[in-house]
Image 1 (spheres, rainbow, N blue to C red):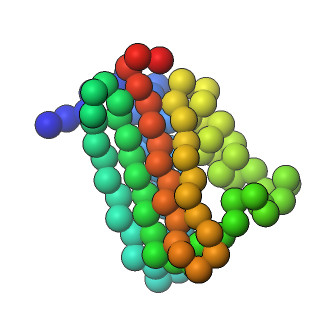
Image 2: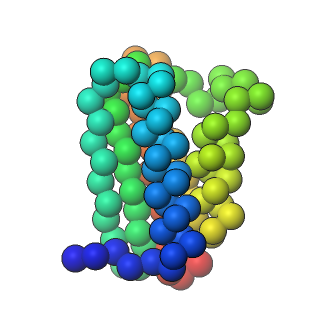
Length: 102
């Protein structure tokens, strides 16, 4: 079943997903990646999960704005949110969400 969202939200989700996948290619070459799109109770979510080396999100220097602007900022600008679950040695999970009830 399709997940229907406004065009600007679809673009934000697609561009944010592309930025996350680009980070996987850049920082975790050869990692396995799962990409999942779901819609539950009016919330559309995209999850990108990799089994790469992971990282500490709190240790990302301020001048590195890829995840902060290309993903979190883009989603926030369209009423969405981003959750990053990562740690060194255990891969990375990025979840992008947008809710119709925003």
